[in-house]
Structures are given as structure tokens and as C-alpha cells.
Length: 253
Image (cartoon, rainbow, N blue to C red):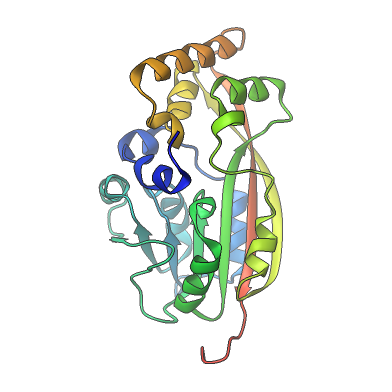
């Protein structure tokens, strides 16, 4: 299996499939970020690791300007097709192509686990205005539901998962130049056909790198889990959101 850094680069080479299959975020999360960071039509924010623009498009109506950055050419191409009027730049968590103190908030949706925090957090801090906000968000399958646990096993998540959903990302952020870190949790459901669940599963980074034979076997295992369930089925998610604010650092003002 590929190393984590290889997964981050090579596991997202199918932007169109990712965009068509991955879930959005509950509106309550967007409202939470807007309220906590006091965003409005004058606000300029950054979506870092923007992917195909799923989070960007949900945020558009709430701010004046969004800059987007992603290292994957395929993701950027799909972003450009799906998100008219927003430019996406090539860059990464360690090299953000923006000048110092440019944005009121930086958002990282479903991507911070790919970052190297000791390098990424100072770089994020650099582009934030004084006291600006950092928002992290993840959709996680709700493992309190039995069939989701079975699905995770069928898709080999318990073997190959690229990150541990139980990591205290708040503590990681608090170790950087950030203060007032807090976490909120939201729940939502996607109504999906069995085939849509399968297609969503197949966009998982480590699965995209499997050979065709292994992918077919995994797909059969996933469909076996789904077979006794209603079609479409309610797929439950827990969405974890972290917020923090840029701490004052000598030389940044």
C-alpha cells in the first residue's frame, strides 16, 4: 500500500468521480463557521486543499471572495469546471500562493489529515489577518450504526485508513500559533442508492490506487453489505468541525 504522502498526491487523480460522489457538509456547519468568524460580504477567505470545490460552493453565498488552493491537477480541473467565477491556484499546506495577512479565515475541508502540522500551521498563520480564523471540517461515517461498521470492514478502512478519525486535531492546532480552539459536532444523512454508496466508496484514496482485480473484489464485498438494506439507503454521517484563531506572534504585526 502507498505511503501517506503518495496517497495524498496520487489518490486524488479522478476529480470528476470524486466530485460526483462525495457528500457535502450540513448547512449548520457553514452557518457555524460564518457566525464564529463573523464573515460577511466583505470577507476574503481561503479554501486550502479545496479539491473539486464541494466546500467552496457551499461557502460562496456567505462571503465576498474565496481563494482556493489545491496540489492536484485533476482536482483543480474539476474545480474550474464546477465552480465558475472562483480561481483555484496550485499550492499546498506548506506553500500557499498568497501574500502575508491576506484572508480573514482559512478553511480545510476533509484534508487537514494530509498536512504536516508543524509546517502547515505557521504557513496558514502567515496568510491570516491578525486574529483571523482557522476552520477544519470532516465528514465521518457514523460508526454507531452497525451496517456502517460492516461497510468500513468491507472497504478495508480498518486496515488501510489514511488517518484516525479519533485523533484530537484540536490539540494539534493548539500546539501551533493558534488560540481558543474548540470543536463542534453535527449529524446528517445522505439518501443514496446502493450504487451511489459503492461509487462513493471507490473514491477513497487507497482504493483508487488498487489494481482492478482488488477493486472488483472489494466492490463485491461492499455490495454484499448493502444487499439486505433498503435501496436507496440512509447513509449517516458525523461531521466534526474545529475552529481556532490566529495567535499574536512577534513580528506578524
